[in-house]
Length: 223
Length: 194
Image 1 (cartoon, chains in turn brown, yellow):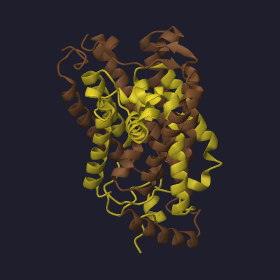
Image 2 (cartoon, each protein chain N blue to C red; image 1 turned 45 degrees about the vertical axis):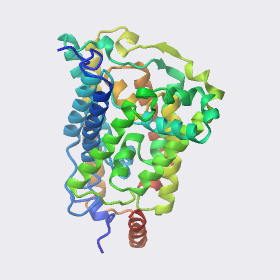
Image 3 (cartoon, rainbow over the protein chains, first blue to last red; image 1 turned 90 degrees about the vertical axis):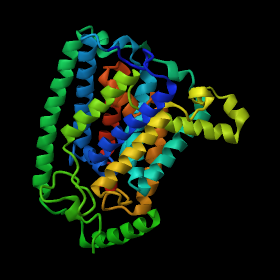
Image 4 (cartoon, each protein chain N blue to C red; image 1 turned 180 degrees about the vertical axis):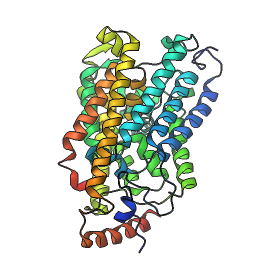
């Protein structure tokens, strides 16, 4: 077995597009099952109510990280042929800041908004329109900061290379931080649940009625 | 009246999780199980293709194509649009891996929601804001994400998950920044969600 299969010419461009659809279907299916088609559930991450975003992301990263490492170590996967992006530190930090703002305002990221759109959510459609708009704004303004995009160039660099410690040790640290985070997340969720019990105390009866009407209207406009 | 957003359904018996917002819908999967499965999908992408998952790149391809259709000369002179216009197989920007992957994401999300009884079409929002406010903030948030994903050369999927799994320095820096900003602003925007 020589992986990545595509890089070794096991199949061509057309088949790669078919694989893209299959991988995408699995990706979208799991995201929806995890509850990530619901912007409110995603945003609950930032209010310590429901930390599924953290749990799912870190479980996924650890799984893929260990899988890639093991396959590479056993000689099945040629890691040098795996795409790794160049680190442009400043533009990536700025981009991350924009994404953080976008996350708290919009509740989705581009991938989860696709899933939410598929379930018929109008807020996700608006979010998606926003993503197009944002990319258009970026594209139009691109000449202004074309140079900035390449500042902080650290080359293709991994955490073990940067910190000058072994790959295994970095993986161990990532896993330790994640597992610590998982326990913290369970504790925070339990605490929040105990505080709020079975009912949502923060709502007055009036807002619930108002909400019901609005949701009814929204449901009608969606279809 | 069966409101899909009634608090008792959103905050059910154990109240810890935001519940599926439709009565009778299947429960969400355990997050750790979901995460491991997501990780295996990501691993499959690396093994088969030598690349990870993504999302914002597909939005970029469509945007670049739209600009080219509307103003060909303008798009021709822009390095950013050209990058995506020349990216597709056989010169077709839409025949790109990420565009097809995102079509799959849509289909997969639809399939999962249909099987779980979650094709609700509801607007996901906190109880204190109107649907109109939610839609405006969704548009604003999406716009910020679009800009940010281009500065960062990827979004939560491409940088966060895919770059994170190969321990890419820029991806981890990016991800820390995303969460730092979102947490820093959460209190100011609590009306939107809580």
